[in-house]
Length: 367
Figure 1: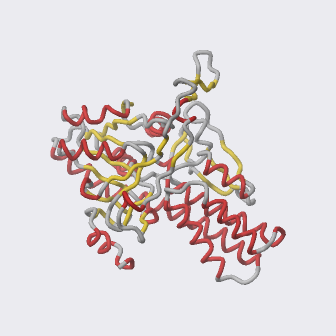
Figure 2: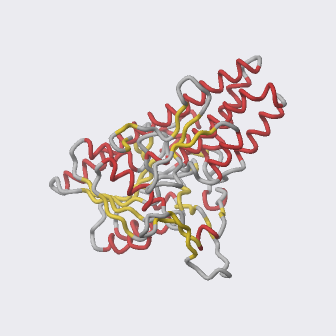
Figure 3: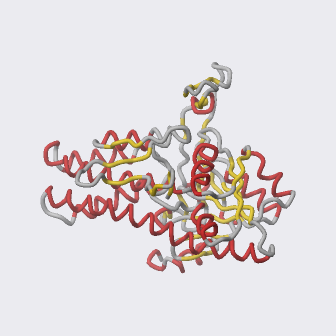
C-alpha cells in the first residue's frame, strides 16, 4: 500500500540478504521507522511488544522467524534449537490463530527436507509464500467485499456508503491490503464514494494511530470517533455497514476480535445494520466450535490502560499517566462475537453466512 506515494508491505526480506524488514507500528502515525529483525529473539520481541500486530502480519512474522531460526539451527543445537524457537514465538500472543498456523506450516515443510541447509532454504521459501499468500488472499476478499458496498451504494442512489470499523484490520495488520479495509480500498479505487467511521480503539489506539493514518495515505474519507460512539451513529442512520477483522474464528462462525467488537455487533443487530467480518482462511481455527468457551483471550499489562504515548505541543514524544498510579486495571485484549450476530464472513473464497454448514461448504477440505 502507499506511504508518501511509495508502495510498501508491512514485512519484507531485504534483497540479497536474510535480514527481514518491518514497519515499527509503535511509532506511527508520528514517525515512520523501518526496523531490522535478525535473530529469533528479535522476531519474538516484535510480535510480543507489538512492533507488528494483526493476525495476518503476526503469522507472516512468525513464518520469517522460523526461517531465520532454521539458518542458525546447525550451529546452535539442531532440532532442539528449532523446537525452542517455535515455542518462543508461539508464546508471544495467544489469541491470533495465524501465529500457530504459520509455525506449524513451517515445521511440516522442513520435516520433508534432509539436511539443515535444505531445511533452511525451504523455510525461507515457505516464509515468502506465507507473506505473498496473505497479501493475495486479502486482495481477493477485497474484491468479494466490494460487491456488498456496491449494492449499498446503488440502493442509496450512488450516495456515500458510511462504513464503521473497529481497531486496525488494514494493511498494517496484514502483509498488504488488509481484511476489513480491503473492500473499502477496492470500492474507493472503483470510484464508489465511501466514508469510514474509525473507532479510536483503546487502549492501544490502533484506530486513531493506524487505521486513520493508512486511510489518509490512501486518500479515503474518514472520521475518527470515540469507541463508544458507534451505537449512537447507528441509531441515527449514520452507519450503512460495519466491517471488522478477526484474530481467530471457529468453524461455527464465532469471531474473536479486538475488545469492543462484541458491543458493536450488538448495536448493529439492534439497529438492523449489516455486520460483516473479513478474514483470510488462515484465521479459521477448525478445531474449535464454541468461541466464548474455547478461544483463549489475551490479558495484557494494565500499564497500557494507565499510560498513553503521543506527541506534545513542543513536538516531543512522551508517555503520560492518565489514571491514579495506585489503581489496578484489567486489560483484556479481545472479546468474542457469537455467530448469531454476524451477517456474513468475507473470505478469499467468497462471502458466507457465519454458520458451520455454510463455512464448511466453502472449505470442503475441512469436513
